[in-house]
Image 1 (cartoon, rainbow, N blue to C red):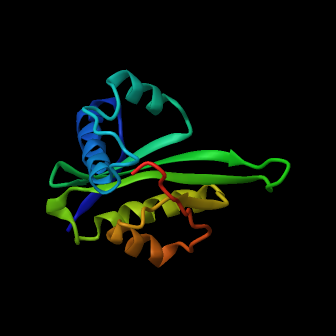
Image 2 (image 1 turned 45 degrees about the vertical axis):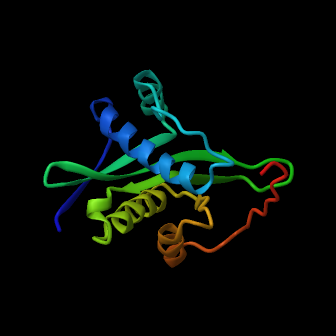
Length: 157
């Protein structure tokens, strides 16, 4: 499978928003106590502003001229009185169209971010993966170690 990876541009707004809405819907279905159902993930102007910021990036996976997946990450500087200074890439979202799953696309997208991080001397790549998301736990588990767990107790069920 010959897959092209490239950074997104404003002309990709519709497909990026569609994919992020599908990813968000998956979270709504599995964590309705946390997430709201929404119509749009970003407005076009919000997306444009995000693209203009140097710390946010979307990489798209294109197969046969069709966008079939994306990874959204942002760069941030960490450090304070209690934590050491470090540069982090935070993965906000990873999505692959259902029709193209199990073809190595998510792995290629994640590998691309790992390559970018190495080339830019980033200290760490991090993400939060919900416990219900078996596919992401499996993928991230191949490369990432668990640094922390978030435990929750819902008072309003």
